[in-house]
Length: 381
Image 1 (tube, rainbow, N blue to C red):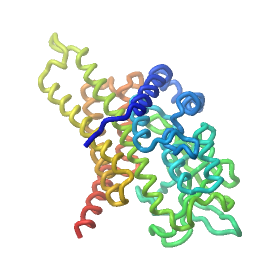
Image 2 (image 1 turned 180 degrees about the vertical axis):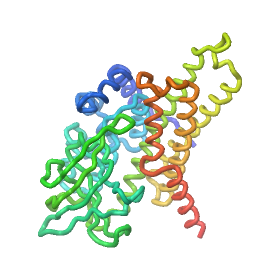
Image 3 (image 1 turned 60 degrees about the vertical axis):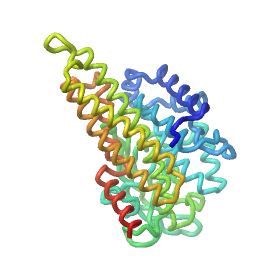
Image 4 (image 1 turned 60 degrees about the horizontal axis):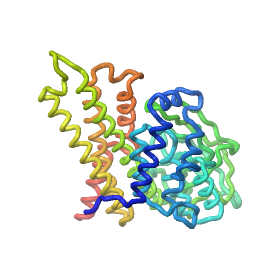
């Protein structure tokens, strides 16, 4: 199977890598994470205006560059290498993905805002009791005239402190865990009745606990058909998982490269520890995990457009490999660096923290292994 990139995709990778090398080195990133805002809005505007990558995966009729999942993969792998904290997945992949399928004038206007860097979205889907389920929802939206009234609570809404809009899943029918009866709403963060508690996450991003208390929404807030959002949610979240896997590949590359470089410099018994055969074997095992992760991620992006069952299997298979690699490569990187690997001054510890969070993002390794098993058994039956 051909995994080669087009010339345009190669140029996209080069331009993103060059910008990040000039404007997003480790010290600048660490300073931004520690600042009051936790990010740099001027970088986000540069993504929109200088690089145009916020529109890379949107069709040309919506103002984008006509790309797709592969362009997202290229961008996210470079973001992983630089530990970019800006909310690309929640805004472009999830927010843009859901709005693209809505087809309304209001949705198209918001997409234009995303591409221009003025609209940022945060995906409010997780609830305290829901674990990794998209459909275990206590948040409700009831009809009120032509509009809706939203009530409920969402947990760990990544990027919410920076967002202009929240993408909220809510139950408009059915029982608490049913796939039927789930709807998606676009909620301006300025809407009356939203209460947020913001906090930093261990990997340098910002998130919020969000409560909705009788938040009144117009009819244009609904994305798609009421109660029938399950297939679209699964598709867009699978696309987000694929993008997260691509980011993980960038993180894994840096963990391996940083460890290899360090072991060539650190000496024991008068020679670099990279000369010790047992450590050479360890680093080869790390390299194999990185390469397997890249291959599985490429395959997942190739299959994003396939029928739901095949897409879901490919995505879960990639996420399982990514989860295992993040644990193995990350822990070995820290062990080979010693205790100093976890200090704030060394980049390797920051990559390890991001790798650790990625392992559980949108479902842990065990969750996706069970999902893959269930899909395989259903097909066999």
